[in-house]
Length: 113
Length: 116
Image 1 (cartoon, rainbow over the protein chains, first blue to last red):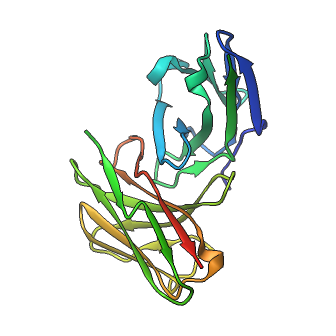
Image 2: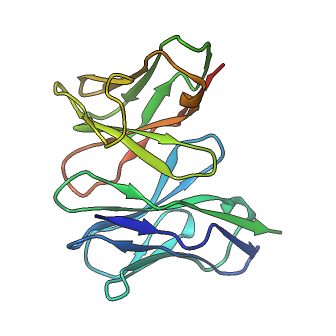
């Protein structure tokens, strides 16, 4: 069975500092990997995805994620956090042979001024 | 491009009534649409997957007769919560994929259902 783990319920960083939101997965084969962000009472917004190729993926709003096959991780990063980055972040995985996307439990990021 | 809308954004109903939520892909044809349920401070739980013109595939534990899904066209899917009860109160989110490639799902803004 496929699963996605976001080990941290909450991440707090100061504005201007780098941020990392962790994600590990357990899916057979080489899945597609995604990060989404959710603001209060809103749907999810796509940030970035990993399909193949370069392990460092750049996405929206200055976010990037690093795919590590040996550690089955796909951590989300940003070099300098903004207060407006405060939101709920979801990691998701999807097998290559179907549309069955599974989400992690979410990590609430709080960036303090 | 790739905008998904949901209507209504918020609905309050009495226990025992049925509520219909619409999900539309506004500027693309959606090969597949998904319905999720999200409880407060929790992740999204996939309820069902639907393809246009065919029956929805429900996840284990989701009652088909309770949550009726109709995917009438390539741009519209509806979720009807039948005989709603307070425990059905939740945030319902739909999403759609544009084609069969490795593309992201495009999410609607969600519908907040409150059953009194």
